[in-house]
Length: 347
Image (cartoon, rainbow, N blue to C red; front, side, top):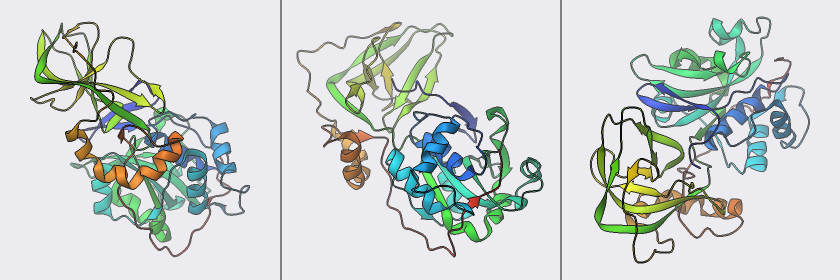
């Protein structure tokens, strides 16, 4: 069901940032290890977070380890073949970083290792070549991001906070070879509106300060948007009954369907019906998957641009509107060279 994924949510810069399952890189495979961790942000932890998966991803680049390490083109080819992720290299400015990192994007960067901050270079003090890292989240007050370094010994030691102004110069000639992926963009989840209620129904959450009620955002179905712990009973209006699907599999849990909240500070979020929630969701008939107009309008542009990819992933034209996979248009950047990265850098 949505949310039951590996990885963790980190409160950073006023936003809940998804931190993917960490993988320590095999020798010379920093590029593919970083690519896997970034892909797991797009898939919200659905991919195997193992060194074996890193090696399988590398094999899908089309050749063995090049003398200078894997290039950005190798990485993009492997991500496309293995996971169906269509990505381009880009030149994104510091202001672009601030915007993207504040809105659920992660960047895979090629950096000159000796130009990284000392807390990273001490892991391989004699290495002078290129390295790949992942950055996620943004804290405006400090102008910082979280660096996920595949050289970190453990996941607990990954995710160090660094000023973005110290990272950007470390890319040197590779500034045009950034690769960006967005949280939950390839979850391949669909949302089907089964019933709409007019007027809305009243749902009562039997709160006691301990019970947790998760709320979901239809555009980020793999992650809970909020968690409520009301100290006493809380009433909310709900105007629809829906069901999340993944491919051909229903994600509706045995505890009950999802309900869309109407009005108030949680307007538009989805609450899962179940124990400790009282609401009448009965109706004379169901709508057979009719998609709500407000929902459809909000994602029309992203849906149109990715329709072909979704059809390929799902094995045919989806019957409902897909969510969580939309991507804005991209323009490939022109770089000075697509060098291999990380050869000789051992884990």
